[in-house]
Image 1 (tube, rainbow, N blue to C red):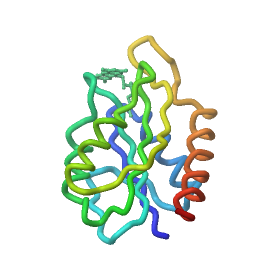
Image 2: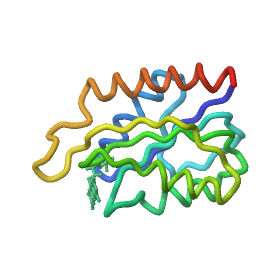
Image 3: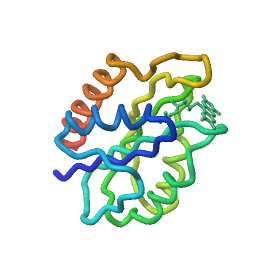
Length: 140
Ligand SMILES: Cc1cc2nc3c(=O)[nH]c(=O)nc-3n(C[C@H](O)[C@H](O)[C@H](O)COP(=O)(O)O)c2cc1C
């Protein structure tokens, strides 16, 4: 099973989660600017909330690389607990790409809220989540 990790991160929080996930699943975490050169069964896709939605770079990545994606697993951080999961799932469905039922979400720093989040525990939780997803998706 080929696994890839992509993320969009304005301030580094989602990048931290992506690197923890990459280390856990044995794939280098890369920005969504890096296209998928080959088909991947699972793509962990990191996306945070900016003005209530994911950055356009994330949905563009899905559209432009859809043919090389077996299933997307969403992860991210936000000031609230809100995930961009529904929006990414909808964008993926529009181009025939499946999204895993579960996603990982944690608090992210914004202004004076949630200082230092995602923190080491968030990264460890993200890594654990990713390992479990690989097991689940590997058998279905
Ligand atoms: C321009 C901007 C807009 C944001 N809008 C929201 C928002 O609508 N809802 C929310 O919960 N967090 C919002 N946030 C907070 C980010 O989702 C949070 O800081 C997240 O951890 C950023 O991830 P990053 O460090 O990977 O860029 C916003 C942050 C920025 C910089």
